[in-house]
Length: 169
Image 1 (cartoon, one colour):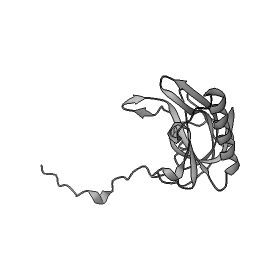
Image 2 (cartoon, helix red, strand yellow):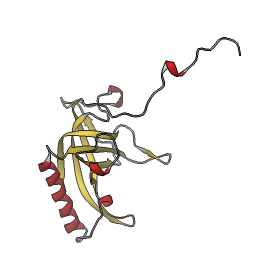
Image 3 (cartoon, helix red, strand yellow):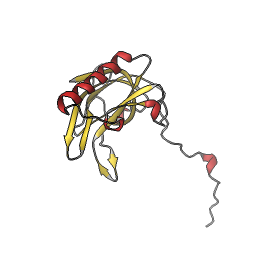
Image 4 (cartoon, helix red, strand yellow):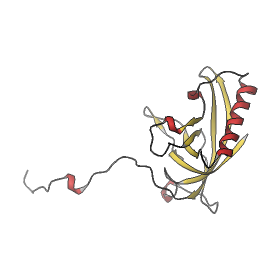
């Protein structure tokens, strides 16, 4: 079942190039932050679909929170996650990434970044194989919605960090 996430905050986007783990390209992925106070209906819709996938596809298996694509952001130590649920979605295929007017976006456009608000379409599915049982989300597409405060991605150097050098070695 496709679920449309509207006005959610984007975190850890790997939308134009696959994410790298242990030196190897893995998948395209993103995490979406869903506000617990203002988006209760969306969270309830996702939780209902997770329960349906567990009941129908995993025969009612008991899954811990670490086996679900939807997690409580209050349990994470990342900036901006408190007060939100986080939903991680990925895909082996590059997802559709479009602007507000539905025109395609590229990485060079610099429009989509960690901290901006997006609309997204994901599809939940049950994994049941030799890697275990879990509920995952496939990332189908993202539409830029509006700017937000960028998540810090580490600090950068400053001219004040360096001394002036003379020409002698």
